[in-house]
Image (cartoon, rainbow, N blue to C red; front, side, top):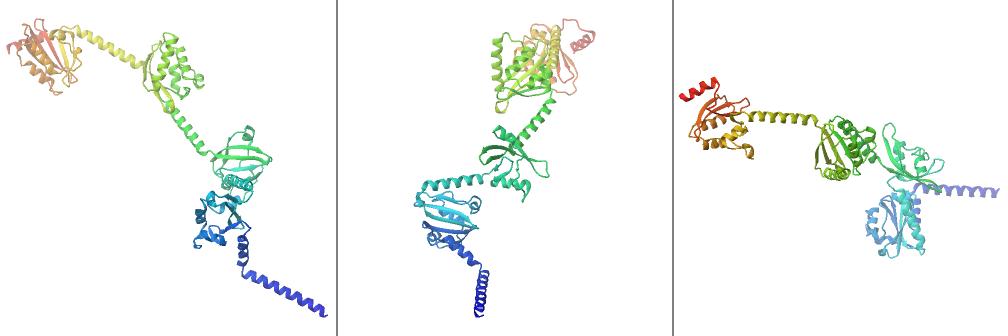
Length: 516
């Protein structure tokens, strides 16, 4: 009975002690944390200095780390540690969170590190940095560091990288893939389901293929160039963001379509050749002007084939021989590239084309074809009518000259040239009314008529009445000078020899002039 009571007392005492220990631990939870910090600060035989960080904040350090702290532990952050160690240990992470993502990291020190290495790791929310003597197996340390660096490079790559099994299950992803996955599907989704569902094209071709992902609840797509590499662990996939390229291609295509619609409304034929001298753009008018089939133009012929076809269609001036034709085409291309090609083509059909060549950006050349047959025909007809009128006036016996509103001579006939021994057409300078009066004065006797003529011409478009005057020439002849205002403000001065019979009205006027 006494033994039984002793056992009961032993059990009761044990329970009391355990309860007290639990209560002490519960009331002082930091004791366990302190124990963890103590364990993390314990030297392992190579330790020189140990730093413990909670995110950016320094929470503990070993005695060997004091020389780095400068007796200022309150404001000592991860950034300050990195500033002190970056020269000796290049590659120290910008943030402790990097270690949580990629695992431990061992950095070999430079010559200034005195044969030490920095070992960084993330342990249950605490970032531990240990400066220790370099390991004797330097090759092994170098391999570990290289493996850690490669792991970090892939994990922190700015474009999505993932590993996909043969049964289309995602087994590993990097941070960029995770961020894209959350953007498309939100948090808490099945990460094993592939974000890029159909990779048959890049897997079969072995090169990057353009793949799109649809954004939820929108019509927009995200475009990537996805490349795959088959490994023992599955398909290693890389996705390069090409949304900017796709947007640029769409903008370029829309711009070209806008240009094409604009060019389709032009009455001028347009042919644009790229830097490789291939036809890349033409408008429908070009087909009408050149009679070249649309199928031929759509096949993107080169420039020489284009002009050869024009020659065969007799849609350009016929060359004397093929050799000179080739030289002519070489000169044409050179002139067009320099922007100085401008020719008028008179075709065997009677049509006339104005053809010009202009350089465009990126080495392209544009040719413009304009049908100016109607304009040339009208010009030729007008010129013919002018020549006919000139011929008729030159056969008139009376000499006359016409002066414009600016007082310069704009026309004179052959009789005028003979009478006054001058040829205004032979002079490059304009002949003014003053110059003409000086010529008349030299061959005539004194008369106030020339001053009156000068004032009449200079009088502008105000109301002016026609008048007559008799002029005695130095050779004894007499002229009748008639000054007439024309419709457009010009003035015609007409000279008639008195010996020539006059019309009855002119005889009366001339008699009145003689009496005065």
